[in-house]
Structures are given as structure tokens and as C-alpha cells.
Amino acid sequence: MPLDTSSYSLALLRVDGRRWNELRRINAQIRTQAAADGSSYLEMGHTKVMCVVTGPSEPFGPARVGRTGAGAGATAGASGGEAGVVVSIVVAGFSSVDRKRRGRGDKRIQELQSTISSALAASLHTHLFPHSTISISLHVLSQDGSLLAALINAATLACVDAGIPMTDYVAACTAGSTSTYAANDESADPLLDLNHQEEQELPGLTVATLGDSDRVAVLVCESRVQVSRLEGMLAVGVDGCKQVRAILDRVVRDKGRKMVQEGTVQKGVGLEDMEVD
Image (cartoon, one colour):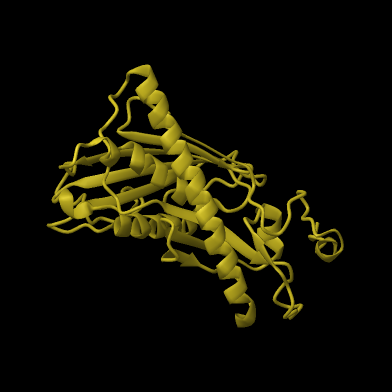
């Protein structure tokens, strides 16, 4: 059923009741699997993903680091002086309505793996772990739009949980436009955080920024859109990334506070607690 975009200008509400600049409900957890070095679970609306991080560890074989393919996932940053970031994605058959089963050799999966691997390799301090591998395994449980953004956010949380040094959070979000490319509407308004129905009918892009800054780490646009609309979409997406970054930071801080209260870890000494002569 085609998406009725006429309601945007009338009620200023989208099909799921949100306004143009509102994120969907985001629920995130870290340290969900005690046996893993780092793990996370994230929901963006009805898009649900899990992530497990292993490493940094020694490669399984001489051909492991730097290998890209169906068995090893996508690798970035693999060289003699840096750790290789290996990303693998498994999409559950029940995650979407069409129940299409995607294998590890699927081109769409390989594109997602390569994008996530490159984005995280640029933020992680891989030079501290030469001749090693950081394995990131992502599992898609449910799909309802903004899949790449959810995968990047879940992988970021899992890397933080694993204690891997990184420059800052890599927070991702999607943005779109209220009118299709064929309509050629120059006054179309931007939209934040697209769901599956909006992604199918409207032009959109996925953007990821590094921390609280405007530095763009990932920018993927797979639909046709007028250049005049692109700047507004990008601005809305970057603002959404800052909102997502605040949510991810709150999840990490809440988990750390809870672990200190339970006595799992000891509270560290901050700059405000140190005696400076």
C-alpha cells in the first residue's frame, strides 16, 4: 500500500504519530552476555539488533586478518601495525515481513559489513593492538527501518563495553524528505529517523557522526534526491545523531553507576577528586 504523504502538511504528524524531528523510542543495554568481551542490545522503534565483540585477540590464522569474504565478514584497518576490525552480520529469517533468508554472501550484507567496519576502524585506537583482530558479530532480530544506523549504534555500545579505546561514540541516524524525487517539490520538509514504510516510499540517507561534533563518519544515500533538499536532510540527520549520542552515553553511564553500586567494579578517580598542588 503506497504511503499517503498528504497527511504531513495537514496534521504535521507522521504515520506513527511522530513529528518531523522526533526520534523513535530507543532502548539500549550493554553487558547483556557475560561470556563475551563486550555485548549490547539495541532497539530503535521496532528495529532490534544484538552485538557481541570479541578481542582484541590473536588472529586465528595468517590469512585471517585482512581477509574479506563470506566466512570472515568485512575487515578494515588490518595491517602489521594496527588491529583488524572484522564485522559479520547475521539476519534472522523472521526479522522482516517477507521472511527472506539472507546468506553471508549476500551483497547487501557485505555492503553493511564494509561500512560498519570502516566507520569503527576510524574511531577505535587500533594502533594500540598490532597483529590482532577485533571481531564484531551483529544479529538482526527485527527490521523496521534505519537498520544501518541501529547496527552502528549497537556496535559502538558493544565496543565501549569491551573496553576498547576509541575517540568517541559513533552515533548514527537516518533522515528523509516528505516528498518523493518524482514530485520535484523544492519545499519538501526533512524527516528524522525513518521507519520501514517511509524508507520504501521516500528518499532518505543514513548519517553517522563522531561524538558531539559535526564530523561525519558515515554518509550513505541510496535513493535519488534533489541537491536542494540534501543540505536540510543532512542537517536534520546530524542533529539526530547528537540526540542518539546523548542516549548512548546515558546508557553507558547508568550501567557504570549500577556496577559501582553493586560492587562489581571500583569507582575510578576523576580529575575533580585528585589533589593537585
